[in-house]
Amino acid sequence: MAHSFQKDHHLNANHLFQQTEKSIGRLCKYLLGAPTETARNILKDKTEPVRKKGDKPNPRGHGKNGAGQYTGAARVRIAHPALNSGDPCPSCEKGKLYELAMPSVFVHIVGTAPLKATVYERIRLRCNLCGDIFTPELPEGVSEQKYDDSATPMLAILKYGCGMPFNRIETLQRDLGQPLPASTQWGILDTAAVALAPVMDAMVSFAAQGTLLHNDDTSAKVLAFLKEQDPDSKRKGIFTTGMVTESEGHQVAMFMTGRQHAGENLHDLLKRRATGLPPPIQMCDALSRNVSKDFQTILANCLAHARRKFVELVDRFPDDCAHVINELATVYMHEAIARTEKMSPQDRLAYHRLNTEPVMTALEAWCHQQFAEKTVEPNSGLGKAITYLLKHWKELTCFLKVPGAPLDNKLCERALKFAILHRKNSLFYKTQRGAYVGDLFMSLIHTCQLSGLNPLDYLTWLLKNTKALQSSPHTFMSWHYQDQTR
Image 1 (spheres, rainbow, N blue to C red):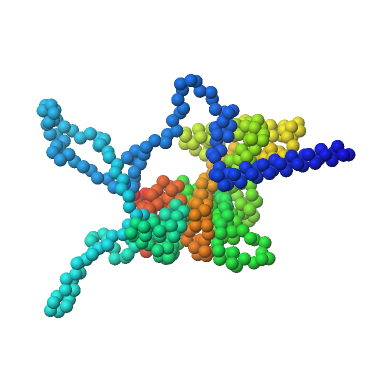
Image 2 (image 1 turned 90 degrees about the horizontal axis):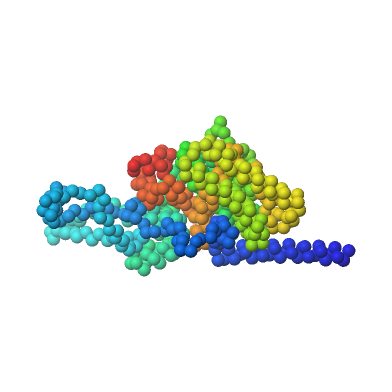
């Protein structure tokens, strides 16, 4: 009996040690930043091929930006001061000159304040007899308003796209001799949010009709909510929900900050879905709060989330975790091929069934085998990771059954980095209104990025057309601007 007690005590202590070590590892990643989770980095000793002596590593592709990548730069065409196309060659005096298709390009970059002020000193003339004063008009293209339509978008991009707090922007502008107080910045963005609200509402309506919905949560802080906190309330958390939807070949990003979690915000979104449409594909992790209880979706769970559970244990169970990670690497390799060849959803499904399904079937059998042969303790870290994989197997393999179902939720996780960046720098929103303004601009900015558009140009276009967008906001989506600029 004493021996049994010692054995149980040893197992409990070992389990506690594993859990503590895992928690410390997570804390180190939180404080120091996690490295990339690629198999090359995680399983470096096992997966890297041995290079022959003298072999050079493959280039990583991080070279200089070519002139063509400066899409927002001004272009100045410079002609030769003395020669033209068709002139005789001054060197050989026999041939004729012609213009080359590729000009000689020089990129010149200057520094300036993010928001640049210009002071127009209009010389006034006054009659010494009647006293009338004559003042010249402002130059053509300069509006009478102090803040140009392009100033507000730049401020929104700095604050909600790059995570710079108002006070930091104020300090930067003041140091560069072009002051812009924090309170003024908020007033500018708050006013603009009123004008742009119809576009945000139209984006939500469009997203509700989507065929694919990604959603996830991250924590947030709104001071007004904390002050009004009911001690007896069961709901203590404040969340920022990120959603990315796909519909009609377009992607829309949305952010929603408040008491509601991802599933409740998804419920509100699907209430605006047209009747008669088939259930959309929903990609999220396996948390129950990500799912709407009243609306049906085709649920797909994040394969990268399941993989990450093995990544966290690779130091404790190197061989078993390496097996799972390498098998999933094969799955992602086939997904990369499908994307490279731009397969249709049906062709992609057929390709995955032919090439990926055998890999996943073998992995499922391997998971069951570990428990059947009792080589893995179910309550150990590895056992829990395998249990998670098997418990959500149907949702994790949705891409093998439903055309267009993604493998993971990385698209939404990348979107949530906007909210996380703001939280790390600005720490909190003061009021629900402040959270709404932040959500609105983050949604517009990231939707632009998903479309490959310049958010400064798009937001400027919206603010120049505020009257028109009030009556037909659905015609002012980012892809409509893209169609106009082609």
